Image (tube, rainbow, N blue to C red):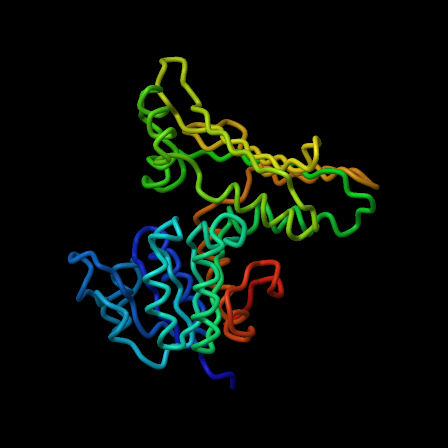
Length: 320
């Protein structure tokens, strides 16, 4: 019998609670042995009850230092690497491996090289491995289109479109994409760097690194999606990777309330050129829960250091 992997869930917002439910479904191969959150309304409660399942006799604590002998931590707190680096460093001192949904961690080497080097060094010093995962970034707009280039010769370009109906997603995401703001409020927050999908530039950098393109620049533009009444329903964000004068990567993301044609769509241009489409698109929350849990066995068997999706075997579903 395979020894269960001992897992701590760090962060119990909507994503963390969803991950918790998926972790409990993977027992006995994965065993949840702890949970961490700073919310006083959650500390001291049973994590199974918080997640809407049965009691599992694992009490939420407000600091990770209380845990020892942990194989892996699934970390689901914030999007910016600067905000989570202290949390990751604390975890790594115990030698625990980390699967994090921090968007900027999915491919930090281009835009955040200094914290990436610090995290990599700490992981190697403590014989641990850390990676950033998610549906976007981490799969739908970077790893998946990269895999789709496998049968292509003379690759000339990659175009990805993702259209998401934010109405069926969690409330924090609706706020993150600006739903309900005025256009003036939206534009002010974009200008302040406080609004927009985090991770699109990381996806472009990951694709370029995987292909071997040395991009001259990466662009990232965020515009509001406005209703007939003049209210902001969400965002339309476009990122491009420019090689010389040619646009070789184009990522188009629409996340708004009541998008009537949600889809994940790719165009791979080369020999041959072809299109791939997922009608309805991948549900970002459910898919993120799954990919985080499915990465645990892989990261626990990987070499120490900071790894991206380019460095690891592909995650896949597994039976308990």
